[in-house]
Image 1 (tube, rainbow, N blue to C red):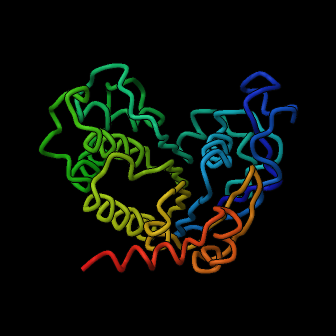
Image 2 (image 1 turned 135 degrees about the horizontal axis):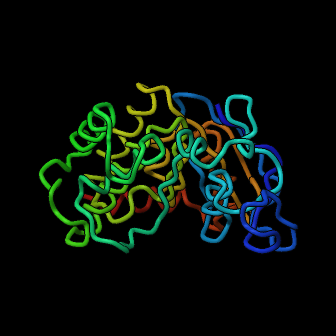
Length: 262
């Protein structure tokens, strides 16, 4: 579905939109992997290792060297509007710049498919928005303004907007931010089912390794801007790799933590 080859990216160099970065400020270097339809791939690693930068490069929000291929076609060849129909990114920020209703915000996910901004939604657009609103359990707040919402509610609204885009590939940067444990589990179970049932591809950045193990099919472990390990979630989250990347015995820490629960 999506293949990444020798991807390098940072935040300096060529002007945005050129598709080329000069390499002097690379945050990620020579990243290569692929993710198939129906698959949830977790991007793991400590703070500052380049996880968010990787997602931004795949979404063409920053310049990069290397190749991102969608179903055999170079992603750089897609016009922006066409690319938005295929790849959607939900970043970490939940900052609100304008106050719209929940329904209006979710409807923005149909922008690439519609003729205007929040206007002239087709019957199909409206049906997609309604379906997503119900699936993410935000129907009861559909008429509220988003600047009145809690962080957890806002995160679900922005995720609904992202899913309403109906992309082939969805990129999520810490999708469980601001959510309590119950909603984290419910949301990830929903996403895993959504990916499989709709034959989509999900690439998600996670800090919580327990959630990643529960949710992911495959994973890449990043360290200092490169891939330290890749494979199935079980292969990637092995004690030796975790010790090397995080600098602590995470397995022992987890087991000790469990003894604190009675």
